[in-house]
Each structure stands twice: as structure tokens, then as C-alpha cells.
View 1 (cartoon, rainbow, N blue to C red):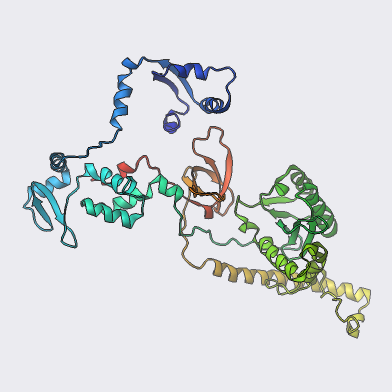
View 2 (view 1 turned 90 degrees about the horizontal axis):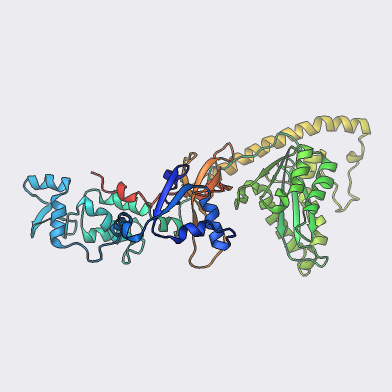
Amino acid sequence: ALDYFHPYVHGANLTIYTDHAALKSILSTKLPKGRINRWIMALQSYQFAIIHKKGLLNLDADALSWLTQNNQEGLSAGDFKTLQQQDSEIIVLLREEVKLPFVWQNGVLGRTLEKGEVKPVISRMLVSTVLKQAHDGPVGGHFGVDKTLDKTKQIGWWSSQIQDVKTWVQHCEGCQSKKIRTESTAAPLKLICPSYLDEIWAADIAVLTKSKKGNRYLLVFMEYLSKWLITAAIPSLDTDQVVQVLLFEVVLKLGVPARLIADNGTNFVCEAVKQVCARLGIQRSLTSVEHPQTDGLVERLNRTIKTSLTICTEGNPLDWDEQLPFVTFAYNTAKQSSTRFSPFEVLFGRKARLPVLPDLELESAKSYETETWVAYLKNRIPLLHGQVVKNIEQAQVRQKRSYNKGSRVKYDYKTGDLIARKNLEKSGFPKERWSNPWTIVGPNNSEGTSFKIVKKNDPYRHVSTANVKHTRPWFSEQDRSSLVAKP
């Protein structure tokens, strides 16, 4: 009851009258365990006093409990006529001469439908009952709007029938939590365009087959402007491995990045990585839970590297870690589709000398003296980086246009709104496809595509994050009866 009435009773001084005498002794248990302990901890956020009231004297609560019981025998014809006569909309029709499509049959007002069938006009006081039977009841099946609307038409007709069916189905909590949702709520593509070399790095870890040397994981770092790739084969998800590659392969060879993008894996959110980034002044950007698209550059790269390793190690798949340096070099010296240059050329200002027919070297490549070559690079590299930035921006415009095609539902969430979050855990039948409800407590980024959320009525206010792609509005079932068939 406290959970149900939380918005009204939280923070207030309450007096609870109950005929459950054992409740007082349970709450005063000195060393509670298990479920009792969890209940007591949850109740500590409320201020209340419990007063025992004998069952014979607790008549008000008993009377209210009986009011919620369903009428198993249903309404008689006389009751139906009485409710029609009390309906304001039907009273207006009765004052005038009844004309088609309305008809009188046995003292009951009916309406002729499209196929010539005559169905009774449903009083507004019965609309919730009809909708509950047609959608929630044993013969309702919790089907969608079209099937529920057709079933209500088999029972009767009322003026706001279509809209009321939509509202009723929309607010059904069972349907909201378990049904597959077909429409997409993916936010428009957010562009991450670096301004200079070594500004942004992205990191990720991929799982591969355990090699002969015992390596099972592929650690990847990529620089956003040049697309320069750093890889390492590691045997376990050890935080030290991530820190060492970040420090010795990225920082000490190419400089301190301004920003590091990674997922919410324990390897990247651990205290060691946090401390290293804080001391070096690296801003960490973590993706939303179960939303790796934020780190899409390396997510897509992983697929490319895995494919190359699979092909290059054909016949010897357990030697992938021996082939990894060659595949990494091949990637760094290959033309990148967005920059239109190879990562090697963007980083060093020249094309790499490949170990393929090295004797066929042109004389012009050897004619530069040191001072001439330095002067050339001073002019060449800034122009090259400027062209790379321009090429990336043009590629991102094309990618954004392609990504944003199609129908996408947009929800303008605000702080305090209730939402359902997609349940991405793999489980059997039956499955709660949407965990609900959650309350938005604030934005998680400036674009409004990620939010900080807490579980509704969570006394500990544990904050989580959710991407808009994995959310949908949550409609409370408690007030749907008041929303249908309004005069």
C-alpha cells in the first residue's frame, strides 16, 4: 500500500490502523533476515505509526475491500436499461424522436452498425467494464487496438469507442512490458568530428577464440582523425592490460589524448583507468548501457579486424595473435573511406614504404635532404590534416543522411516523465521485454539522447542511464478508467 500511494504519503507522518497484530512485532525484530530484512529496509523511508485494531471493529477497511470485487454474475437487462436512462448523452437522444441509425428494441436504445447489425448503446458508466472484458479479460487476450475494437463492437457501441479503445490498450501495463515494439525510436545520428590529431581516441575489447599462446581477447585503440589503429592480444580481462596499452602505446608514443571514448565494461570504468585519466587530464566518455553505437567507430572496426584475421589464419585459426601485427599494419597502410588517406599517411605525412618489391624504389623518393624534408612536412601535414577533417565531415554528412532515413518516432522526454526501458537480457519464456517504470531525473548528455533514470519508488534512488533508442513512454494503468468515455 505504501508503494502504491508513494506520491501521496512519502514524507508525511502516517498512522496505520490494521487488524494484523503480528505486523508490529515483525517490524521490531532485532536481527531480521532475508525477505523480512528487505521489507524493513524499504519501509524505513516512510514515517508511520502502527495501531492495532480488532477485526470486528475494522469494518471500514473490510467494506472497501469488498467494493473492488468483480461482479461475477454480470448485469441484468433491467440494470442495463437503468444505466442507459442515467447516461446524459443517451438522455439527450431519448428527448427527441429516435431516428436511424438509432433504434428502440425491447426498451433498450440500439444503433445500427455498418453491416446492418444492431448493437446496444453502451452507457458511459459501463465503458470501463466493456473494455476490461474485451481486452484484459480471459476472452480478451490482450490483443492490439484493431482486434480489441472489433471485440467491443460485438458487445455494443458508444460515441468515443475508437479513441477509448486506443487509450485503454495504450495504458495496459501487461502489454507495455511484454509486447515487441515495431517502431524505431533511434535518435538522429550524432556526429563526432575531431579538430586535430590525437584529440579523441576510442577503445574496445573483442572476444576471439583462445589462441595457442593463451590469448583470448583483442584490445583495440583507434585515433579519430587519422584512424590510426593500435591492437594488443591479451589473455584475460585484466585492468592492468588496458592501462599498460593506454600508457605505453598511446600516451608515451603519440601524446596524451584530450578524450577517450569507451563502453561501460569493467575494464574501462574501473578505478585504475579512472585514476590514470584523471592524472593525465583525459576526459572519459562512456557509452550508455547496452548501447555500443556511441562507440561505433571501433565496434565497426572490430568486425573488419575479425574478418581479416579469419581469412589470414585460414587453416590455423588458433594463431590469430601471431597474425595480428600484420593485419594491424595492413589496416594502417590502407586507404580509409572517410578520410580518403591511409592512417599512416595522415600520421606521418607520407605514404608507407611497403615490404612488397622494395627494390622498385624511385630516385625522387631519395632526393630530399633533411632541411628540405622538414620544410616539406611543415607545409604538407597541416594541409593534409585540414583536408582529412573536411573529408570526414563530408563522409559524416552522407552517413547521417543515410542513417536518418525512414520513420523514427521522437519522444520529447522531460525530467519527471515515466518511461519503460528495453530489457536486453536474454531469457526464456515468459519474458519481460520492457522493465518499468523508470523516472527520468535528468539528461545524461547535451543532445537529449541519453538520460539519467531511477526505478520508480526506489527508496535508495540508484541512478542508471538509458539511451532514447531503448525507451518508450510509460502509461499508468491506474488512471485509465478515468480517461475513457469522458462526457
